[in-house]
Image 1 (cartoon, rainbow, N blue to C red):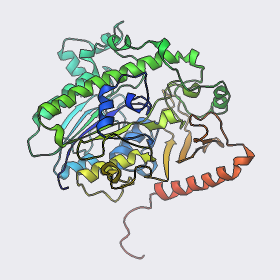
Image 2: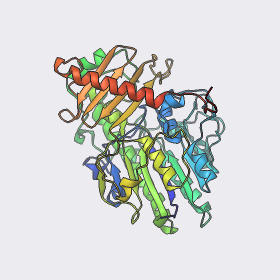
Image 3: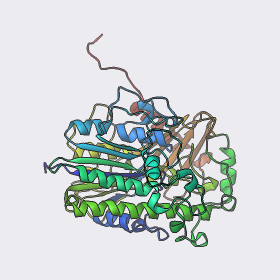
Length: 466
C-alpha cells in the first residue's frame, strides 16, 4: 500500500491505561474511545518513557529516550536544537501539520513556551487552562472573546462550563484545522488536551454523572504505607496517605468525569471527519503522555515511582479496513514505538537517532500480536522542580520484562522488584527476599546493559579511523 493516511493524534495528559470501558473499566463513560477499540487495535501494555510530562513528551516527539536526548526535566530553559522533531520531518515529507493545546518540550513557566523548528503550520497553544500567560495563550484569548474570565470560571461553584472548557476549545480548533485542509494533501493533527491532569475539577455537569460512593477506589493495602515510608525521601508530588485521607473516591469520580468530557469532544472531531469524507483515509491514534497514581499505594499525582497506573497508558489505533479491528495486543510496547509507527505510515525516512520500533506489522496482521519487545524502560532523572513540586534530584529507572518489574532508585540505594504474574498490582516488594536474589541481580544486570546501550550518546558521526 502506497497511500499515506491522514493522522489524527489525540494525546491526553496524565491518563491511566485502565480508564476505558471497552478494555474492562465498567465505571467510566467512554463510548467514543470504546468504538476506536472495537474498530481498531488497542495495545494494553504500552509504557511511557518517563512518568513526568516534559521528558515523556520530548521522547514522543523525537523517538529517543529522555536521557539520550538530554531532556529529562520539567521546567527546562530550552530544548536540544540538534535533535529533529518528527513533526518537522513529517512536514518536510509533504504533510500539513497542526498542533493544538499543550506541547511542553521546554518550560512554559513565567512565559509562553517558545516555538521550536517544529514544522507545524497550524499552532493553537494552551499549556494549561489557566490565565497565567499575558500573550500567546490562544485558549485564554478565546475565552475572553466569549466575554468570560477564565480565572473567575475556574473558582466558581459550577467550575468552567463545558461550552468554555479547554477540551471543547481543542475540538473547535481541530474542526477549524480540518476545514482548512486542501484535498489531496495529507495532514497530521496533534491534539493535546490538559485533562485529566490535576487539579481534578471537571465541569459540574460532568461531575454530577459520577457518584464517588459508587467508585471502586484505588489499589491499596495497609502495607503500602510501610513501603512508601521506605521511599519517602524519593521525589513525589504529594505525601503518602490512606485512600480516605486522599479522598480518593471523590478524586476518582472527578477524574472519570474529565475523561467523559474528553470522550464527548473527541466524538465531535470524528463526526467532522465523517461529514467531510476524510474519515476513510484517517488513522486515529489515542494515547496519553503518562498515567496518574490516583491513590494507588497511598500516592496521588506523579513523581519518581513506576507503578502500573503511573507509567502504563492507553494506546489505540483505528483505521477501519486498513488495520486489524477488535484486536487487543498484550505485547510490551513503548511510546517510542508510536513515534516510529507515525514515521512509518507517513513514509517519512527515520532519523538515525530513532529508538522506537514500528507497530505496523502487528496493526496489519503480518506479525503476531503477542510479542513486540522483550522489555520496556522508563526513566526519572531529576525531573521535578525542587521549589514548587517537591523535587530533590532523585535518579531512578524501571526495567520491565513480561513477568518482572525492577525499579532502582540509584541515589538512594533502594529498589523494588515485583512478580507481575502473581502480583499484578505490585503489593509485594521482593527486592530483599533471598529466594529472589538471583532474579533481582540478573534484572539489575539487564537493566544496566539496556541503559548503557540505549542511552549513551557516543558523540558526533565518525569520519575517519583516527
